[in-house]
Image 1 (cartoon, rainbow, N blue to C red):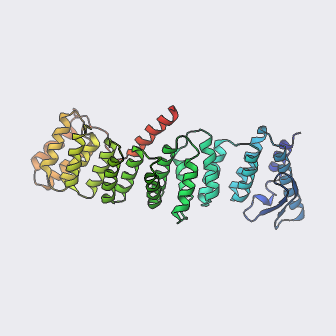
Image 2 (image 1 turned 120 degrees about the vertical axis):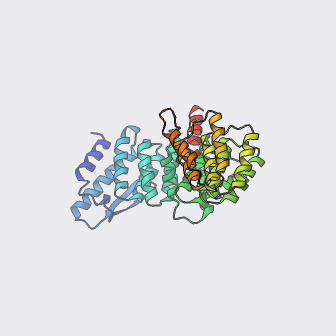
Image 3 (image 1 turned 135 degrees about the vertical axis):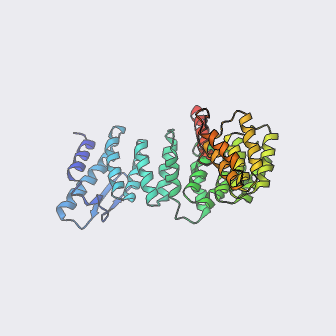
Length: 374
């Protein structure tokens, strides 16, 4: 029987007795160097017999590592997963390092499990170590993985240290711009807006790993935070950097301005959008109709409503309800009733109702498809 098989059987047989996998346990090892173990034992509150079993299992595992092969990966994965589930991340980190020094890499599933546990414990070092391995696996990483990575930093207040880790991670892949964009988004999504903006500012000032998606992401972050003056400044910075705003840039801007009632700026950027040759879409008209209607300018809202229909853009139920409500407030009951009848007519084909401007999903999907294609 191979050493790996004996180790796996011992783990299965004695894991209930083995105090190594309890939160109250810890291990100490003395070695010269890492793979020449001279002495290894567990310090626990268990009986001598249980300590003996724990030592036997762990030493068998170390013996397996010393003669490691990729065929034993299932054993190593089981061992690391048990350590993670018990909350013993220091043990998991050591096992991982030992495997990597033997050029043995685990499956993305195991690394994902490690990343989740590291995030829960705010273990930044382990989180970065694992996240790097996931990037090098050339597998498509989900938004959740990026969020787990970002959440590891929630208790770190030193933005410079955060930037150091992000730079290390971004430099490991040829798709560094895409990675940075998703990291910035993840930090903001996990409630760390200032860190997200700090990362962006650094990369922007040093003129690398920044593209239009980066700027659109930051516009959305600032808009959602209500920091519209900073958002307008970044829009200007976007153009100064030589990027051409797209419909996502303008829609993000208009939606954020709508929320704070900046009608003058809505009109200005809508005019600029049209002059740039970018066709307004449903989201554009939704922002304009809602913002002007809410401010009492129902006639302007109706003009935008007629314009979008002339362009064969189907209104959503949200637009109809917004117009009807604002017309009623303005005392235009007949027109409100007419629109209500039109909305409920079987011949009216409504567009999907926009929850809000959410350019991120489209950006990530576009960026992801480009990355996978390359």
